[in-house]
Image (cartoon, rainbow, N blue to C red; front, side, top):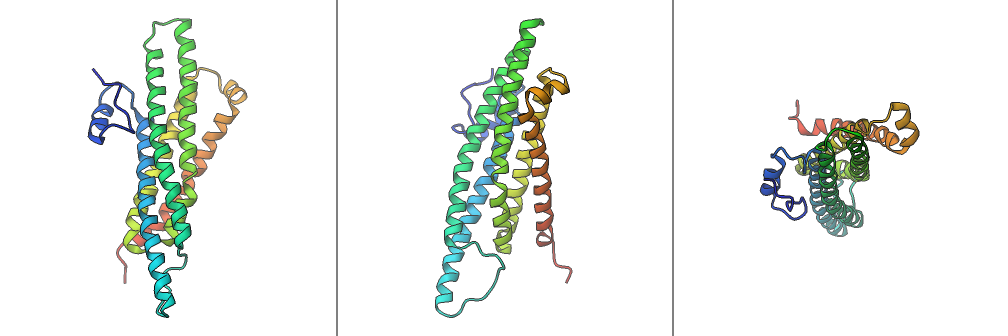
Length: 233
Protein backbone atom coordinates (compact mmCIF):
# COMPACT_ATOMS: atom_id res chain seq x y z
CA UNK A 1 0.00 0.00 0.00
CA UNK A 2 1.30 3.46 -0.90
CA UNK A 3 2.63 5.66 1.88
CA UNK A 4 0.80 8.99 1.99
CA UNK A 5 3.54 10.46 4.20
CA UNK A 6 5.93 10.59 1.23
CA UNK A 7 6.33 14.24 0.21
CA UNK A 8 8.38 16.08 -2.37
CA UNK A 9 9.81 18.43 0.24
CA UNK A 10 10.78 15.94 2.94
CA UNK A 11 11.31 12.50 1.42
CA UNK A 12 14.56 11.17 -0.08
CA UNK A 13 14.47 11.37 -3.87
CA UNK A 14 14.67 7.59 -4.33
CA UNK A 15 11.74 7.08 -1.97
CA UNK A 16 9.71 9.76 -3.74
CA UNK A 17 10.40 8.16 -7.13
CA UNK A 18 9.37 4.76 -5.77
CA UNK A 19 6.08 6.34 -4.77
CA UNK A 20 5.71 8.06 -8.15
CA UNK A 21 6.16 4.71 -9.86
CA UNK A 22 3.19 3.21 -8.03
CA UNK A 23 -0.30 3.25 -9.61
CA UNK A 24 -1.71 5.60 -6.99
CA UNK A 25 -1.72 9.03 -8.66
CA UNK A 26 -0.32 11.00 -5.74
CA UNK A 27 2.24 12.07 -6.57
CA UNK A 28 1.54 12.06 -10.29
CA UNK A 29 2.47 14.05 -13.35
CA UNK A 30 1.67 17.39 -11.77
CA UNK A 31 3.94 16.78 -8.80
CA UNK A 32 6.62 15.56 -11.20
CA UNK A 33 6.29 18.87 -13.06
CA UNK A 34 6.85 20.66 -9.75
CA UNK A 35 10.00 18.65 -9.19
CA UNK A 36 11.23 19.61 -12.67
CA UNK A 37 10.77 23.28 -11.80
CA UNK A 38 12.72 22.75 -8.58
CA UNK A 39 15.55 21.21 -10.63
CA UNK A 40 15.49 24.18 -12.99
CA UNK A 41 15.60 26.61 -10.06
CA UNK A 42 18.45 24.72 -8.41
CA UNK A 43 20.53 24.86 -11.59
CA UNK A 44 19.70 28.55 -11.99
CA UNK A 45 20.93 29.15 -8.45
CA UNK A 46 24.12 27.21 -9.15
CA UNK A 47 24.89 29.10 -12.35
CA UNK A 48 24.13 32.46 -10.75
CA UNK A 49 26.48 31.56 -7.90
CA UNK A 50 29.29 30.85 -10.33
CA UNK A 51 28.52 34.01 -12.27
CA UNK A 52 28.66 36.07 -9.08
CA UNK A 53 32.14 34.73 -8.34
CA UNK A 54 33.22 35.43 -11.90
CA UNK A 55 31.92 38.98 -11.67
CA UNK A 56 33.91 39.55 -8.48
CA UNK A 57 37.06 38.22 -10.16
CA UNK A 58 36.47 40.37 -13.24
CA UNK A 59 36.00 43.45 -11.05
CA UNK A 60 39.27 42.67 -9.30
CA UNK A 61 41.25 42.21 -12.49
CA UNK A 62 39.68 45.35 -13.98
CA UNK A 63 40.93 47.32 -11.00
CA UNK A 64 44.40 46.03 -11.81
CA UNK A 65 44.05 47.14 -15.41
CA UNK A 66 43.97 43.64 -16.91
CA UNK A 67 40.24 43.24 -17.59
CA UNK A 68 39.29 41.72 -20.92
CA UNK A 69 35.81 41.78 -22.42
CA UNK A 70 34.92 38.10 -22.51
CA UNK A 71 31.12 38.30 -22.57
CA UNK A 72 28.65 40.82 -23.98
CA UNK A 73 26.15 40.76 -21.09
CA UNK A 74 27.80 40.04 -17.73
CA UNK A 75 25.43 39.67 -14.79
CA UNK A 76 27.39 41.64 -12.25
CA UNK A 77 27.76 40.72 -8.59
CA UNK A 78 24.56 42.27 -7.23
CA UNK A 79 22.37 41.07 -10.05
CA UNK A 80 23.75 37.55 -9.71
CA UNK A 81 23.04 37.61 -5.98
CA UNK A 82 19.45 38.76 -6.49
CA UNK A 83 18.89 36.20 -9.21
CA UNK A 84 20.26 33.46 -6.98
CA UNK A 85 18.01 34.52 -4.09
CA UNK A 86 14.96 34.36 -6.35
CA UNK A 87 15.98 30.94 -7.60
CA UNK A 88 16.31 29.62 -4.05
CA UNK A 89 12.84 30.94 -3.17
CA UNK A 90 11.42 29.47 -6.37
CA UNK A 91 12.94 26.07 -5.64
CA UNK A 92 11.20 25.89 -2.27
CA UNK A 93 7.94 27.17 -3.77
CA UNK A 94 8.14 24.53 -6.51
CA UNK A 95 8.45 21.72 -3.99
CA UNK A 96 5.49 23.12 -2.05
CA UNK A 97 3.51 23.30 -5.29
CA UNK A 98 4.42 19.69 -6.05
CA UNK A 99 3.03 18.56 -2.71
CA UNK A 100 -0.09 20.70 -3.18
CA UNK A 101 -0.63 19.03 -6.54
CA UNK A 102 -0.22 15.58 -4.98
CA UNK A 103 -2.91 16.50 -2.44
CA UNK A 104 -5.23 17.69 -5.22
CA UNK A 105 -4.54 14.49 -7.15
CA UNK A 106 -5.36 12.38 -4.12
CA UNK A 107 -8.65 14.22 -3.71
CA UNK A 108 -9.52 13.75 -7.38
CA UNK A 109 -8.66 10.08 -7.23
CA UNK A 110 -10.98 9.61 -4.26
CA UNK A 111 -13.79 11.33 -6.15
CA UNK A 112 -13.28 9.16 -9.22
CA UNK A 113 -13.52 6.02 -7.08
CA UNK A 114 -16.94 6.97 -5.72
CA UNK A 115 -20.00 5.00 -6.90
CA UNK A 116 -21.67 6.40 -10.02
CA UNK A 117 -24.30 9.02 -9.36
CA UNK A 118 -24.89 12.69 -8.84
CA UNK A 119 -22.73 12.81 -5.69
CA UNK A 120 -19.78 11.38 -7.61
CA UNK A 121 -20.29 13.78 -10.50
CA UNK A 122 -20.33 16.77 -8.16
CA UNK A 123 -17.27 15.54 -6.29
CA UNK A 124 -15.34 14.98 -9.52
CA UNK A 125 -16.21 18.47 -10.79
CA UNK A 126 -15.14 20.08 -7.54
CA UNK A 127 -11.92 18.08 -7.29
CA UNK A 128 -11.11 18.70 -10.96
CA UNK A 129 -11.45 22.43 -10.47
CA UNK A 130 -9.13 22.33 -7.44
CA UNK A 131 -6.62 20.28 -9.42
CA UNK A 132 -6.77 22.79 -12.28
CA UNK A 133 -6.08 25.65 -9.91
CA UNK A 134 -3.13 23.74 -8.47
CA UNK A 135 -1.64 23.22 -11.93
CA UNK A 136 -2.17 26.87 -12.83
CA UNK A 137 -0.33 27.97 -9.69
CA UNK A 138 2.60 25.77 -10.66
CA UNK A 139 2.59 27.01 -14.23
CA UNK A 140 2.68 30.62 -13.08
CA UNK A 141 5.73 29.80 -10.97
CA UNK A 142 7.45 28.57 -14.11
CA UNK A 143 6.51 31.74 -15.99
CA UNK A 144 8.06 33.79 -13.19
CA UNK A 145 11.39 32.08 -13.88
CA UNK A 146 11.65 32.93 -17.58
CA UNK A 147 13.39 36.29 -17.26
CA UNK A 148 16.00 34.79 -14.93
CA UNK A 149 16.61 31.90 -17.31
CA UNK A 150 17.07 34.34 -20.17
CA UNK A 151 19.51 36.33 -18.03
CA UNK A 152 21.78 33.41 -17.24
CA UNK A 153 21.56 32.21 -20.85
CA UNK A 154 22.88 35.56 -22.03
CA UNK A 155 25.59 35.93 -19.44
CA UNK A 156 27.03 32.49 -18.79
CA UNK A 157 30.45 31.26 -19.86
CA UNK A 158 30.55 28.36 -22.27
CA UNK A 159 31.66 26.05 -19.46
CA UNK A 160 28.25 26.58 -17.81
CA UNK A 161 26.08 26.66 -20.91
CA UNK A 162 25.10 22.98 -20.68
CA UNK A 163 23.84 23.57 -17.14
CA UNK A 164 21.82 26.53 -18.41
CA UNK A 165 20.39 24.38 -21.19
CA UNK A 166 19.29 21.72 -18.70
CA UNK A 167 17.70 24.41 -16.52
CA UNK A 168 15.76 25.71 -19.52
CA UNK A 169 14.73 22.19 -20.59
CA UNK A 170 13.57 21.36 -17.06
CA UNK A 171 11.51 24.55 -16.92
CA UNK A 172 9.96 23.71 -20.28
CA UNK A 173 9.07 20.22 -19.04
CA UNK A 174 7.55 21.73 -15.90
CA UNK A 175 5.45 24.21 -17.85
CA UNK A 176 4.36 21.59 -20.38
CA UNK A 177 3.32 19.36 -17.49
CA UNK A 178 1.38 22.12 -15.76
CA UNK A 179 -0.31 23.04 -19.06
CA UNK A 180 -1.26 19.42 -19.77
CA UNK A 181 -2.66 18.82 -16.31
CA UNK A 182 -4.56 22.11 -16.18
CA UNK A 183 -6.14 21.49 -19.55
CA UNK A 184 -7.05 17.91 -18.73
CA UNK A 185 -8.54 18.73 -15.35
CA UNK A 186 -10.48 21.68 -16.72
CA UNK A 187 -11.93 19.38 -19.37
CA UNK A 188 -12.85 16.86 -16.68
CA UNK A 189 -14.64 19.60 -14.78
CA UNK A 190 -17.63 18.56 -16.87
CA UNK A 191 -18.95 21.87 -18.11
CA UNK A 192 -19.37 22.64 -21.79
CA UNK A 193 -16.64 24.73 -23.47
CA UNK A 194 -18.92 27.79 -23.35
CA UNK A 195 -19.58 27.24 -19.65
CA UNK A 196 -15.88 26.87 -18.93
CA UNK A 197 -15.12 30.11 -20.77
CA UNK A 198 -17.86 31.95 -18.91
CA UNK A 199 -17.28 30.54 -15.43
CA UNK A 200 -13.50 30.11 -15.45
CA UNK A 201 -12.14 32.67 -17.88
CA UNK A 202 -9.09 33.13 -15.66
CA UNK A 203 -8.17 29.46 -15.95
CA UNK A 204 -8.69 29.45 -19.71
CA UNK A 205 -6.48 32.54 -19.96
CA UNK A 206 -3.80 30.70 -18.00
CA UNK A 207 -3.65 28.04 -20.71
CA UNK A 208 -2.93 30.75 -23.26
CA UNK A 209 -0.19 32.19 -21.02
CA UNK A 210 1.37 28.78 -20.73
CA UNK A 211 1.33 28.22 -24.48
CA UNK A 212 3.09 31.56 -24.94
CA UNK A 213 5.60 30.64 -22.24
CA UNK A 214 6.34 27.35 -23.96
CA UNK A 215 7.06 29.23 -27.18
CA UNK A 216 9.43 31.54 -25.35
CA UNK A 217 11.26 28.59 -23.78
CA UNK A 218 11.53 26.89 -27.16
CA UNK A 219 13.07 30.08 -28.57
CA UNK A 220 15.50 30.21 -25.66
CA UNK A 221 16.51 26.59 -26.26
CA UNK A 222 17.05 27.44 -29.91
CA UNK A 223 19.31 30.36 -29.02
CA UNK A 224 21.45 28.06 -26.91
CA UNK A 225 21.76 25.32 -29.53
CA UNK A 226 24.72 26.82 -31.46
CA UNK A 227 26.75 26.96 -28.25
CA UNK A 228 26.09 23.27 -27.58
CA UNK A 229 27.45 21.94 -30.87
CA UNK A 230 31.05 21.45 -32.01
CA UNK A 231 32.32 24.36 -34.06
CA UNK A 232 32.26 23.74 -37.78
CA UNK A 233 35.56 25.54 -37.96
